[in-house]
Image (cartoon, rainbow, N blue to C red; front, side, top):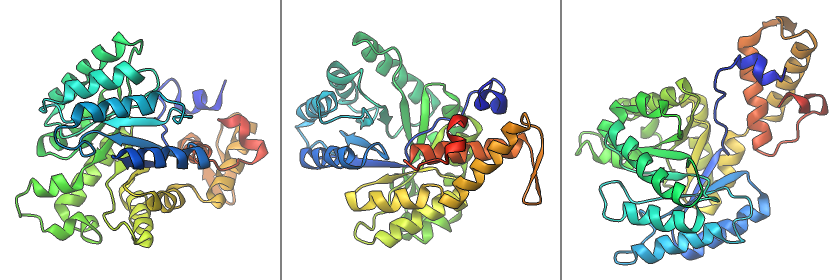
Length: 323
């Protein structure tokens, strides 16, 4: 049996995604992002943005551009998704129809923003699937942006939907929805990690994702030029809140996020040694460096190797057969 079958015993394995989700709205930035992805590979995803990327009156042409770029040769790895307008917008259905017409088979996912509740997500998925199936795609991976009170209240149910593979936290809209009751400095560090209402939202999203094997994606860092702040936010998002993915809104933010959220080589080597020894003993309990390990810790170390592989880290040769 494959190690994953032994460790997860028929349960659905957690979704694995690159640790960085880079947003691009204008044609210039979308093409620049594709060029960077071609240079360094699939270490990060790209999300083309229709919601904030399209200028007023240019929504149809922008969706057309997004679809054409995703369908084109520049999308070498097929790790490009699209954020569409919200469900209440007149442009939601138009975005879906146009993008699916051009690129249904090559879209990595569709990001759905500003949902108010579980019913909104279910309705969005139904509409997306209808368009995707017209163009040969049975099911489209769905990412959901949690940024309203209602969506947060339904976050466990939203994370449980099989087609949803990731939830992102929309911190700025969430803070704004409190109409001044949360101070503006809670949209950025250090306030975003200390204000109780903001921290509660982050933790509930992450907990819901991990309960259902989905990927929690942390909000943006608005400090574009200060890459040390980006790195600090990514470190805290992972270590304190359990986020395994983070948004980027500028190319300079990608590498700090990758470095901060990618497992350290020491972690990877330790995970490989433990799992190889566990496999050699038919996955029974072992002692390693004076500590007891069993299948509970094996699952943890297996996910370390999974994340390392996805981040382009070369695994020790003895561990390559574990994934």
